[in-house]
Length: 91
Image (cartoon, rainbow, N blue to C red; front, top):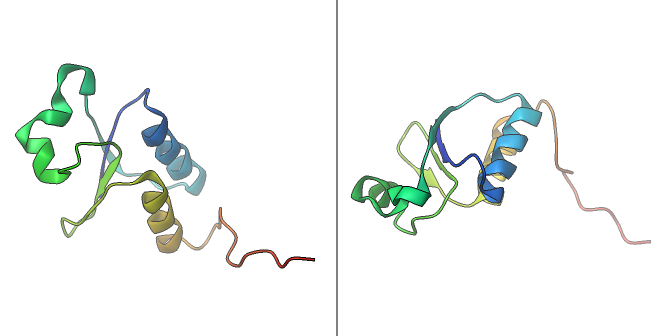
């Protein structure tokens, strides 16, 4: 897996924190959107929406929303749960 991220953007930071909490290590490529790297053809091929973060799986599938990435990581690493498995019942 490879995470395309930026050090100071809030949504990529959310994913970085979640990965750290789960103890999951992934290769990370930092995209410099201040210098137009999001608009580069190489990045458009990964994520046509040109947004961060993006998690590219080993099979080439790209997940491009921070909550979806966190959900995927949660489902792949059930040994330490960060999110509840079932919603709390109303009282």
